[in-house]
Image 1 (cartoon, rainbow, N blue to C red):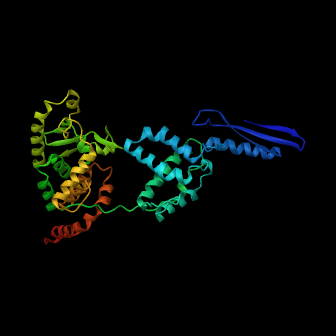
Image 2: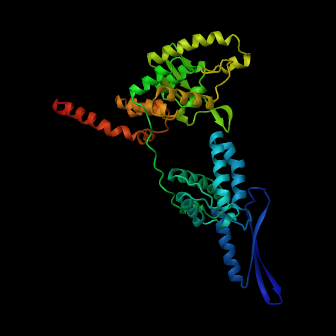
Image 3: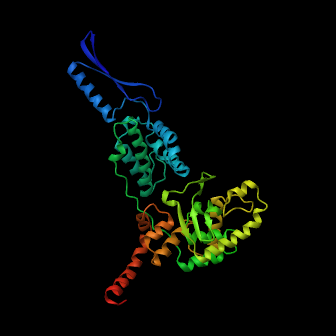
Length: 383
């Protein structure tokens, strides 16, 4: 770093040269250079740049576009630090929404207004390229979270002087009310499905509240039939049609779930029945040790589970709820039977009890009467 005096036809000038952190993409040395008329101006600029470097906010005049950076961020960070399904989601949103909107904008010239205009366009039901196709407030909020995370890494790598997403307020994403069955409807579904190929799977999903991937990734070594518990250690992940084994969604996803006697008996029967099939399986299929498999011992593709489920719902003449609705049904029934929300949260593998309470807030009003009766009985001996 230096201030060098230069003599030209127009008189003296002062050139400021400062080394800034290496390019995070290439590792190459970078410099910032500007020329001033007076020594005082040059010295002042040098001090400003040195302060920026110490603060970690030094930014050079990079020509990198937002699109180029987002691709770099996806490949260098997101791919290795998120779940495969999360990465696939990030990549889809970047390609579909962000790059078409402002991918050609120079990264250092991206403004809060670029983001705000994009969000407004999405909420109006239009796209930046004029084609139809709007997004819900909740989806736009998710889009904002992707932008903010990507730009935060750009800031930490000294590619930008600030995270412009911090200056933008995304829409408040409202959580849609979950669709569930009541206890009678749930029992009717299980009755209809009792002779179906995946009958034990439907019972486990309804009785435990496990996610589809958690149930399909369940191994017999994680099922203690003697103690009547299931331990969730892995999940079956479907990313763009490719199935693989992954880790639970969150740290709290690794959990132990107690089984009721009916579910336990069904699993024991399923285990005994599967024992005959295992004799014809290859060693590789046996090593999978999966509870729910195809007849050949392979894992069941999630799409096939969905197809079978909706066929059973139609056959049952029940209200059409999603497969994930079985998990919601389990939680709702537990709360309606006065199971402590903390216990329900742990059973579902939620990261915090607030997620449980927010998701199943529709149950709380019906529980208020029970609460009123309980306090009346406790204080005054009346119901």
